[in-house]
Length: 594
Image (cartoon, rainbow, N blue to C red; front, top):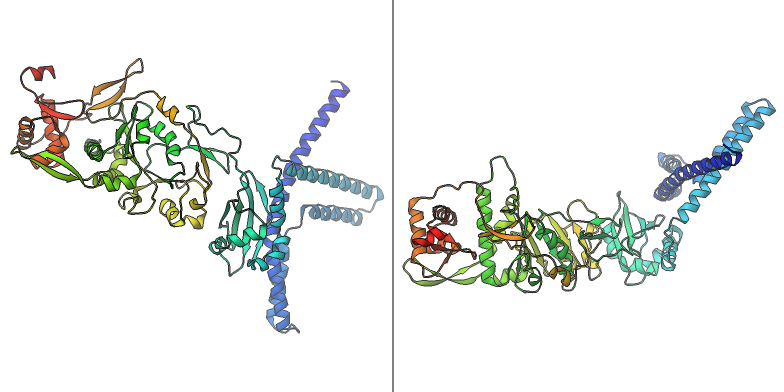
């Protein structure tokens, strides 16, 4: 190895060692800075307590003054020195020790030389750490520089009282990829909730623009709050256009991570008009309709979003269609639960009986229009009568029991209030809440929980459109920028066979969807002869094919008894089911043809 190679190797080793040492000292400096910001106010309080004790007991004859002096000494010991002061004290201590304990001049000179080298290396490492911290890529803008300056404890202390914030004190502000984060110490008269109500005073003290989003929540320990100024986003610069390769729901604006919501959850998607509910839901609807074991059912009385998906989803857009499809879903759910193998908690999706995601678009409209739907039915004596049917009991039943049968309910609404936009029986069953911008804090609490504001889930402060909060029990209240999926992209998606009780989506070897009759995965319990006879008679006497849901009204039997009787008759070839799900009796050659 040449002399030049040796020199380059030594230089590379020295640079690596310096970077490692710099990283170590940078972490130590940050730790000491944090502790000093937290504990220096305690020293200030201890000094005030000592001044009060001296005023009460100037001679020091009682224990009050001695206890205050002891608490001040303890508070001072708990405040660590800055890194530069700590290094200086260490070097001075080693130098003095070497001079006192080593008698020979040569030994003293060696110790002083070693101390000088250690001091120089430490100073170089600290300088590199400071330089790297200042040039880490997060260079503050002019606005951020002004806010960082006004968030400094000295500036805050000077102006807090005149702004109505006496009793609060900031720690050292920190610039992150999501904006400026600063801890705020609160005295006994302040809480995080009260500080949140003083947002206008904070904005005035900082000179912040009105449109700057501010978040205030409880700190990591008692007596502290955390103030976040959203001056930037970790999602800035990312392409948020949805593609099959970028199938996530969106990007976390704080961490920059891809955010996904897995299938199998009961969702609540809420937001005021124009907040972007439809756009935010499209990546989720794609996942729910993609794959041989997934099927999508959309209930959309507005006929806008559902029309985009009718080539790959079952869509109900009239009150009668809503009642019919909910009845089918409830029958399918009860049937799956009745044949669920013993010891198995949830249904296993198959191509014949897939996971079904039921999406209710604008739930407030469904609650009103699909509650009492007049339906004409023919009784056993040949007379036609009108009965009112409702889809809400079936939807509530699906919300309560559908998860075990792999039938999941997603509820979307512009009116996130219990009783107006969300049924009382469905709201408690929601597992994941996706909340875009809402109008009031009360609506945010309905969607995200009563503790939403106290923990930073401020959906009423979100920008419009395309930014959401997702609460699933795991995520922090970090806003998510949702991906944009254009209508043309939805229309261009490949066709898929919509789910129905009579047909199910399957995939041939070539990959094209076909229609096949649903086959029971397990034998059903036999129906009684009287029930079979009553169902058969009702079908035979009908002038047109009969829907299975109407047989319960015609015969007076329960839905379960009708389902078992229909299975017995279809298995024996006595009746057949058409593609639209209606039942007719076979006669002669028709039976063979079936």
